[in-house]
Image (cartoon, rainbow, N blue to C red; front, side, top):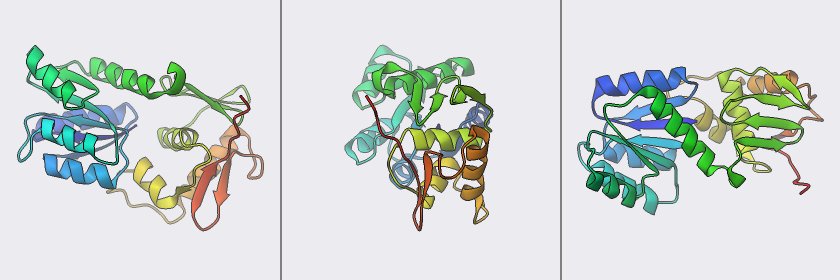
Length: 226
């Protein structure tokens, strides 16, 4: 997942960012509410981990602004406010879940996975299309029944394609979703990554459901036979 952490405690933010990155997520961070709203509108995040006590506008107001806007990422409030009333305020503001500090990192990761499952159609963590099976919880990928080993970056790109079937994903969209905004990329980085995924899954360029859209980007071509 692509995650934005909104936390003004630098030490806590660094620990959280490191743990989520090691868990295979692409993670960015800001320290105030205004920046969160700006980043959320400009960059496609799957999840925002949002503290309530922030400089400027607080997390509750940030949550309301995000829910009123055109984008709707998952929002997990992570805060020291632990009364029932505080939780109700957070959920009523639009949060999808609420976790109190201090917390166990394994619980945080479990809640993130639960939020992922909640967003999948029919409640299944497995996406199947074009002869490819992708489990969003275990991250197991199979191509025509054969298990495929992908790097974390390759997995994120394949998941991005498969969760947006038949949609043209421009190079800019792919760069913003897959990599950190500070990452310096080679001009052919996306092409190289797509080529590696195709080879690992045993497809040539003509048979692979990941198709080039010349001058724009790529599209995962899939016709639902159901």
